Image (cartoon, rainbow, N blue to C red; front, side):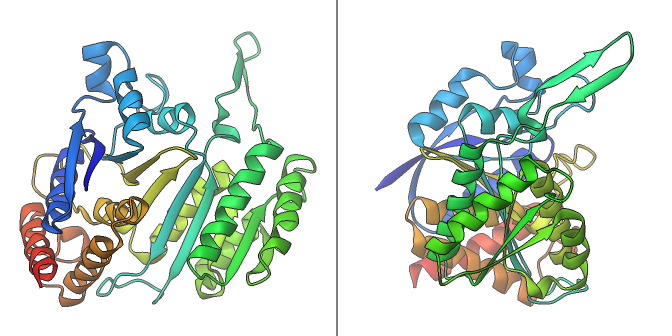
Length: 340
């Protein structure tokens, strides 16, 4: 079977990490036809007048799966985040961020294995903003809906059930947000009885932040709203070595986009220094999503083996290898394993 997948190389270090990831995937022997769109963000604005042309959205809708490199978002002014637009236009309501320790990376904690489930289309990122120029007052509405909360809860519980996880923690601010926070918490408690094998608890967001940097081993799956999930997923990435080594997926009812969650790092773009690990781990999630579980296992295990050996790692994780050296080393391991 040939899988047709939309490919967005992005900008900055995006093309470098995407190239490495594509070569690793091809080394597994699976058949992929890539629908490549080289221009997104600033490049697309200059060429087409929009950071996210409709052709890209149509391609993802048709192929049902995309792999995406980082895309620079202007600070303050400029165009709206391509990532946010992609999630909202395609209704990719579930952001899934596994944060799992890799061997050989020295961090304050060992054997961290957390998954953040973040509602991806509502909350403070709904884009409902008003600015009073006379009074210089900015209002932003954090819209939380019952339907949106129910589907992220159901998605998180189903995922945890399917993957044999043990605990789900509902993260909220119901003590202050008496309507939105309380509704989100209530919906989670209503869904919980359908999954008796899962333990369920809840934490207020500020306490959750403290708990995670003190006792990450006490937690397993965390489901929360958009902004809280955005913050906690980066916090949890820090527990295992940073954004350069964690995966990310945006999943909806009909399609999904798998991405590197780190930035575009324009300061090192084109210097052969970028670490493709985050996107490779995202691609492992993608392989499982499209049913290529054997290939996913090979890539995941060989990546971990490469980190365990530690002889061919990039500088950000303590090595001295270039992007291409790390890429070629992993490609060789994966190809050898796939042939055996």
